[in-house]
Amino acid sequence: MAASLFALLADKAQALFGLATAHVSWFGYVAAPIGFAVLAYVTQRFAPMARGSGIPQGIAALQVKDDPHIDGLLSLPIAGAKVLLTLLALVCGASVGREGPTVQIAASVMVSLWRFVKVDKNALILGGSAAGIAAAFNAPLAGIVFSIEELSRSFESKTSGLVLTTTIIAGLTATAVTGNYTYFGFATGQMGTAADWAALIVIAIAGGALGGLFSLFVIHFSQLRAWQDLVLRNRYPILFVFGCGVITSLCAFFSGGMTFGAGYGQAYAFIHENAVAPFYFVPLKMLATAAATISGIAGGLFAPSLSIGAGLGSMIAPLFNVASIGECALLGMAAYLTGVLQSPITAVVIMAEMTDNPRMVVPLMACAFVADQVSKAICKQSLYHSLAQGFVPVKA
Figure 1 (cartoon, rainbow, N blue to C red):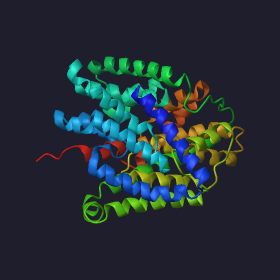
Figure 2: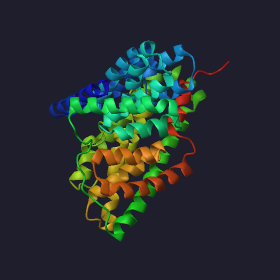
Figure 3: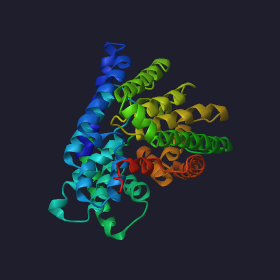
Figure 4: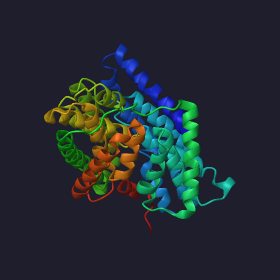
């Protein structure tokens, strides 16, 4: 229920940004820098554990044993702050999504029930995270696979029942609230020619490489502790975040506003309208997403990553005279998302459930497998697990 209501509010927030820019053309270019700075100050001052995606907080909570620290990462007050801060980030035009924050929100709701149900907290965290993904994408299987492949990196029989139960209930609740929809509509493309498969290989390599480079940049930046402590946190933290907002505005200016927001509209056009992304869309969207990520404001990577991947696939399709640009956009989404997450099964299941196109499952699997290998050759660490270390207390 929390995830579904958050999704509805996120849609309203993006619509509000669109309405504001329609009436005041320069609104987004001003809102991003100022909004980033204000949100960073509020986050650092009042809710530091609500920063970023929210998935690293869930992973960190699985790694610590003391209840007070888990409550510091996952709680109802933090969930409330996450909702508000993410919505404000969307109103400012930040290149962030709601899906990652939904994981922290749903896991917080589940953990808050621990005193009443008295079951293993890790099971509640995994179940809540799975429920969050299931409700965010209306994709129950993706929720289960995500909790296994990305969060726990293993499957324990004692938690499997709770994960399955919460995911089923979350899927039913999301359907009741938002209807039985597919996240990116119904896709009808399929792979039928040698040119299609040649395009698949190129898309897989390109998506895996770009996703790996993005993760490598974010991880290396997050690990620059000494430089951050010296320059960002103690001297110019808000000015730095303001600069990230300026980068967001510049990316939007040079792309004609295409890089503002989560990128759902652009991805939908690439899939269903056979639109081809301009050459500048992918690099500028990557830069805008990186700026939002390293700034520390609340917001996730799923939706922007899917938009970037769809744009990449649509750009490569004409090079091979592929009839349906939409199918290459789907492959690009799977490839780039895999490159960022390094969780190929999760990416394939999300794509399959989001588009309801069983004919693309095998090509998506092949694409994700190649992209995963390319990404891991570039970036040796998992993005979310690396970021989670910043939320795990250092032992004395």
